[in-house]
Amino acid sequence: MSDSLAADTTYEVYAIRFATNPARKRGQNFINDADPLKSHVMDFFCWLIVGGGEAVMVDSGTTQATIEKQKLNFIRCPTEALEALGFAAKQVRRVILTHLHYDHIGNIDKFPAAHFYLPEAEMQYATGPDMRFYFLRRPYGTKEIGTVIEYLHQERVTLHGPSIDLAPGLSMHVVGGHTAGQAIVRVRTKRGWVVLASDALHYYEELERTIPFAVVHDVSKMLAAHETIRSLADSDDHIVPAHDPLVVERYPAVRQDLAGFLVRLDVAPTRTPS
Image (cartoon, rainbow, N blue to C red):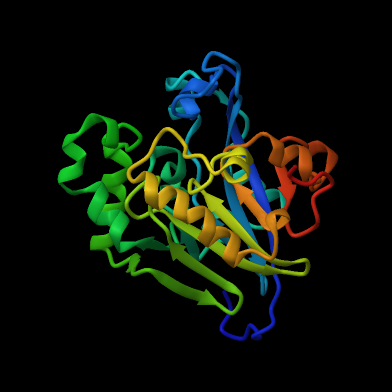
């Protein structure tokens, strides 16, 4: 973001829905679920923060080829969201990486001018001894991790500790749980402090019922992350999970032709969590 941003700067925030899995079941999402075979659609999001004439990506989704290889439904490339708002991927100077799962870092090569921000704990985890366990390494892609390492060697990656202020009104906070270095993003908007929970919160239901998601590194930290998320957001209305189809139901599309793909999060939801 621009160095000239004021301390009270507010941002526009957008959710980009780039893929969906209509065949997902509750038993794949929640441990010991009472109805494990019931349908529980999973959407895939990354995010865009706009302010001071710049666009900052929060995660970068993944490619159509990767989505189709996983037998999921591809919607649109996240870079099309930038274009819809008058930006180009080559203009993006900052990309926030909340963690290194394949569906969050698959398009980083589309941002040739960008510098990347990543929790140090996540880099250590994704390249460390825990990756000998299939359950823990399954959501990681070696090609994508290799690209991040390449960028690190090119001095295009900032590895940070528990929290980092990226600009006035924009910060990252490491909470762990889903992965060892899972981070969330706090951003000031006209409606107040919004938290992009990324995969610290896949569905609203996890927060409402205080339950963990099934893909987990540390259950205790995952549940404690819910408390941190709530402490950083102005209300539950200001919390945005990473994979819940309700996001595109609760927030307005930027334009009619972008319905189901690009929604605005810096305005109040039309329907709030129960």
